Image 1 (spheres, rainbow, N blue to C red):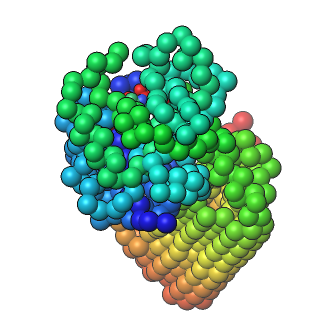
Image 2: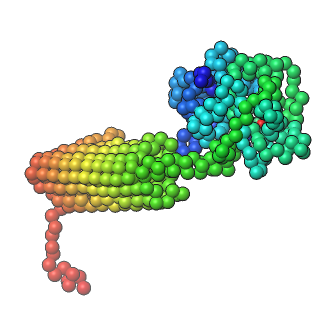
Image 3: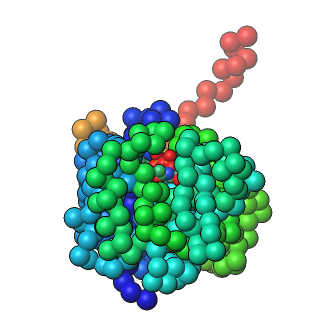
Length: 454
Ligand code: UD1
Ligand code: MG
């Protein structure tokens, strides 16, 4: 097969989203809609992707450059005079490169690269387009066929009652021979449009080229564009079902796939188990035999093997090593680094702290900016006072340290190996190894006091 390039129509305004943000930068499964389209084009074998921009072009261009670098180039349609005009604006970027050009819509996130590749293969060395047969053909362009293929596309607004009965519609994806497309578009732009919408229709290129291959899509949901928030939610649901199904076939157990959200960049190993109402986002990865109980939201976090996450945790940009037990109600903030065989329990918040192997913080604590050595035990209610109002200071606990309940460690402070802190202490100086530090008022019992009071 000859080389192929792709062009994405993305100059439209997306008014119906009622959003400050460009429609194509809204996300499906945590990935911007336009990124799905670019990836689809690249995964289907495009050597280059040209995006046609209009509204918010600077923002979209900056985003795409950051994400895809040199793989994407740009053309500009300053005034939206129709899909044919849009493609015409990109001709300089397209003619003279590859002999075949794929045309995709920037607002259709769920077309798979497998579908696109199959379509491309079916067109061989002809021009063609993707069609779909719909029970409710809505306002899509209608496909007019002869034995030779697709003769023309009639836009709904221009169609006769008879033509509106046609159930085969134009999905909006084309594979044109670049030279044929070039000739047809130049002719199209020679005369002002006379159709119902007064636009230069890309669909007219089909009849100008002559009978084209019409390749029917099996799953019509793949071609659905996002125009408003209802469409966005439907696209999200479709993407979720597909992502979850993919992971189930890779050996992940979903107790309730309908309520489990897995972002597009998340990586899961076989024998991970996900309970209902789990949300996995960003670059999160989870290794084998780990179980995530209900109610957790996990973002950009790397979780090892055989980890047990109890209900209702929130992790951000953190790391949890093998065989650890976390939760319920644990908040790991950026930089929390939990070593192997650790236990972090009820209502503990950790930020930028490393816990070495076997360390424990089981109840009601805040640990920020520090290092906890192997097997150390942080008692209930311990607070790392890491902030002096101006700077964040560091707390270092050695191996086998025991911090009694309700202690405040005022940073910077270092506690030597195997040292103890008495419960209720406020620690402001370093503690040597093997010592006990007690920093609280000594208890005084006043005998008979209660009787005398009465
Ligand atoms: C188009 C097709 C229709 C097809 C449908 C599938 C035409 C004339 N009609 O209709 O046959 O059934 O898609 O979804 O092509 N755009 C630009 N510049 C413009 C106009 C549009 O870049 O001047 C972009 C839009 O941002 C969008 C895409 O082209 O990504 C499609 O445009 P849209 O106006 O939605 O076309 P439809 O009327 O839906
Ligand atoms: Mg549309």
